Image (cartoon, rainbow, N blue to C red):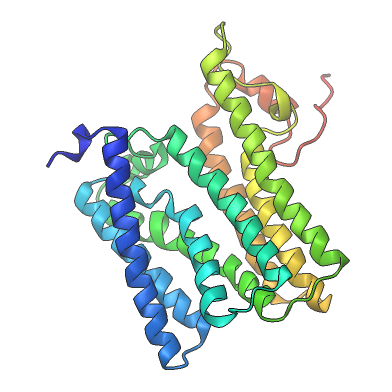
Length: 294
């Protein structure tokens, strides 16, 4: 079968089948670990790596690494729901709020992926760039750089989620962290909507967006992603009020965007008409008023 000839909806069905199969394997691993009283976080990490490898192998067979793209948003919610169902079955308000905000984040991100995805005939431009850069080591780059490292960076954020389920108590700081994590996907949704409208409704040759929230941040969607995970950390922090090693987890997310995602995107956009001027005026990440012109 030539998967490149499938329609978007047909490709979506393939995605759905693959991900359901993958999560069933993950659930079997988790159930096995639970039956032998293995550490829940270690068990979930093994399951997460196994699921990543399944997606990698099937994506390699399909010659499209973008099979992994929705993994970022789908699997964290799967992890949280499984943890709550298996290890913390009592539906406390704090855990319900946590699942709620994770669901909002996951649905927004998955919906945005689906809206911008065209089927198996296309692959994320960043993967193509990595392949063109060094085709000989691309299989290793694909496995480690595209699949395993993002899985690891997201999974360590989920450690804070587990700790919240295990011991956090409702307090003012918990509510504040919840609101931060709730605002984050709203910022992303607004940014996505404004970008979509700009691309589809502009009537001139302007190729660089400079409206709405994009007037204050060149990457507001990335800002929202980082803000979301810092919100989760604030909820975790609300339990003991001590900065510990877990602060490293959202910081690693920040570093991933600052030194990988944003530089790659900026390199792609730098030759777009008007982007150099836009870059000189607008904050790279955190929304700020425009820089004054000399």
